[in-house]
Amino acid sequence: MRGRAWLLCLVALLAKPLRAETPQADEMLRVKALAEIPHDPTAYTQGLLWHEGLIYESTGRYGRSDVRRVDPSTGQVLLRRKLDASLFGEGLALAGDRLVQLTWKAGLATVYDLASLEPIDQWTYDGEGWGLAFDGERLILSDGTAVLRFYDPQDFHLISDVTVTLHGKPQAMLNELEWVDGALYANVYGEDWIARIDPATGAVTATIDASGLVSLTDRLRGAEVLNGIAWDPVAKTFWITGKYWPKMFQVVFEPIP
Image (cartoon, rainbow, N blue to C red; front, side, top):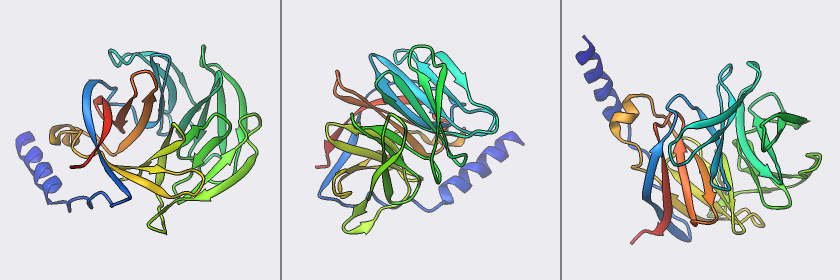
């Protein structure tokens, strides 16, 4: 019976329509995997960042959300802080020595001490929270629409916003965010590509094909969508994972020939 159920699952998966190809932008890139490490396959990854040789991750789901510190050499969770069961964890960013974690629908952001992961403050905001990044001056929030909002990192008051466009058309479903050298990288929820965005204009300047990282076997075992981008400024590489992925990948982005 197990074999037959597995076969039916495989047939159903293969029968699904193929994902749309990565949209064309001024620059077309793809991921090149350099290394991989274990990743907690029970982690519903919402936010990911790299700081001083360690990975910090925010996970979601009601009753299972947390913020955690991870050893990138092994994938081991070194420290975690659980959220109240009524909260669904979302994006994560580091501003100075404080981590800021969004929630999906509660309109609540929790501020943590980086060293202890102890909560030290809470902020409120309107609408949903999806992804979060810090550009050195402002916290940048995505909410699943094409609009990015910029907040003051001291009290989280709204400063401005920008609409993200691809070929002049709004690009919605922006999710997890990462700031790298003046550009913003965003997962597009439900897709296997990443957008590189000019934060001044909102224009998508490059699309990055990140398909093929997860095997069919891992998909059948529950690995879901791509979500999680972290930048290592020393190695000049990205770390990428997804919801319930059993692996995290160290990658670079290279031109598509």
